Image 1 (cartoon, rainbow, N blue to C red):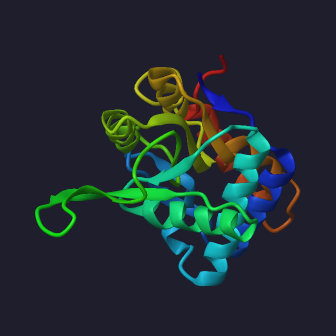
Image 2: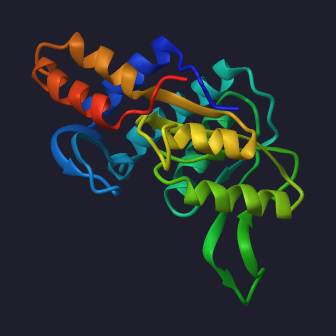
Amino acid sequence: MTATASDSTIAHEFVQFAVEAGVLRFGEFRTKAGRLSPYFFNSGLFDDGAKLLRLGEFYARRLVASGLEFDMLFGPAYKGITLAAAVAMEFGRRGRAVPFAFNRKEAKDHGEGGVVVGAPLRGRTVIVDDVITDGASKRESVELLRREQAEPVAVLIALDRMERGGGTASAVEEVGTTYGIPVIAIATLDDLMRFIAGRADLERWRPAVSAYRAEYGARAA
């Protein structure tokens, strides 16, 4: 299984929110893979309660729109912890008490011990994170969930950069194919390109983003 198509309305609203919040920026940025990117998505800048409330709403809307049935949420350390909590809070606001859990980077040898904090891992579980780069943290999450007898049913992320992973497929597609679960993104790079094409203040970045997509983007299936 690979990434699921984004919802155009949710995607447009999310990209606008990310730009206005200063989380999605344009310029010259060095990525983890060493590529020089004309845009940068830094989820760490969702750094106050108001932004997190809206962010949780977007994640929840996208998950509901996917039609996926699930029982709980899991947030990989570290960024996924806050994201899973924000999404669970939004579902609580909607009247559904969705359990969530997260992991520690290192096992705790006192108190409750172990590496998992929060609700017991069980049932159909959605992994919540910001982006997928090399897929390492998602592999660890899937393995942890399965070891605990939970069933990972999807990875829910904010932005699919649609960049090649280790081969011609994107890192997102590689995760979906490797583990047989869908990757659900609130927005994709294509959504971002459509957004900037309609904004006079951002139009000047379109050639650079298009060139980056042409050089590093995954090939169409």
